[in-house]
Length: 286
Image: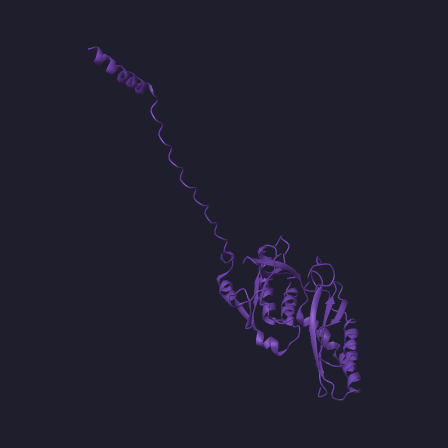
């Protein structure tokens, strides 16, 4: 019996120790890997543009710049190698403009912008007209076409331009451009009926012709066009008159015509100054 008790004591002690020991701690599961942050889709600027413009931009190589500002609001004027389009309306063929490579008024652009301005003013009678145009212009177009678009907008009452550019990351932005408006930019753009301007210019044609005849006396084959820009001030006087790409070869004829224009008094414009670009064609046969 004693041999049995001595043999079971170590076993009982081992069982007691085993009973008092702490149960093994469960192994904590490994944390699941953190998913990468969801990519934020870039803002599609094209969703804010009219469909006609989005489609047309496929064939336009816009200038690029990295310091543009956010696009503002205003009518869209698109000019590429084929056409001039204002708010989806085809207003001119750039091939026709190229046939006469000079700074000129784009008549179709002028008429549409003028109508849009008048509609805006009627709809917002108590608000100042912002006078902003967004220009989408192919970077490969010649400078005279770009300048023609800017100055036509000024004539239609839009002195402030936004030249739309493409930034390196692909978004569109705008660079402010001011077409030539004499005096501070805050000067109001006035209105004067074209027929009144034509009337005064025609009444002074004999004076212009004498300028040409002075050159014709020295060169019997002299012919060409005198193109000039002048500003009609609020009192009807001519503020400035400058050459704008005349083709006639006699500089004295150009200076004489500009001097004559500066002495004309027009009817007083309504609402501010008026900028005019005017061509006169001279030939010996007249």
